[in-house]
Length: 266
Image (tube, rainbow, N blue to C red; front, side):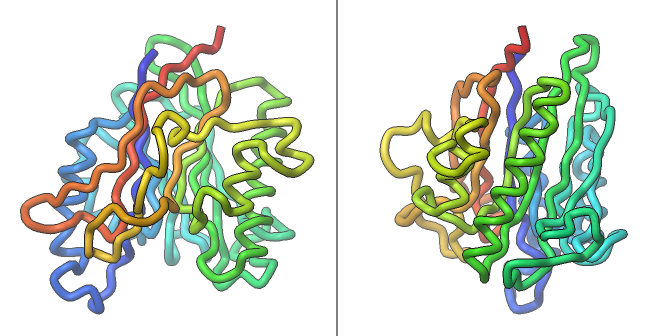
């Protein structure tokens, strides 16, 4: 089965953004999502009110996730899913810290509590299942980014050893391709990496994928910090960074990244 997956940092709502304030971008963000019609979308920086704002525009979708301070407080790493094509089997969240089951916990000099939201979906009418993990690594602490990536890999490996179900990882990693978290996820370093290797969707591209976080200025020069990874059961068919403006403005200060995958669980 072919599926489209998106990762999209929505940019939190702050008056500092002037004309790019969230209320002026809701329709743009929804439009670019609907145009790609992804099966699942990993979002970052979506506060609860923002996620509710999107719901009337995205009637085909539901979402799961909690805030990084618990309940619906502050940033969510919400996972949107096409509710006509997927059935949610289970979902949860852990914190990127030395105590990952403790709400709002943080470690390694992280500026904020950081989270990873996950869900297992069953494809309607097919019985095939897959997991999606979605995260936003710390912007301040290099150690927190490295340890956060390691923790996510360990959780994914543990799940995989229990049931062998394939998985996708999306997020804003605040890391360029040569940084430790990305090398670890690609299986290029670390003990966990030697036992499990994820496929970077950008591997389909020749050369540098280019900028993904652009501060509402646009452009391509630079390196990505937003990624889509998958376990080897997925074949990457296509990947793009959607750098278009919608109705004269950008939907976010990050470009959405979109990958087409083919799943083979046989």
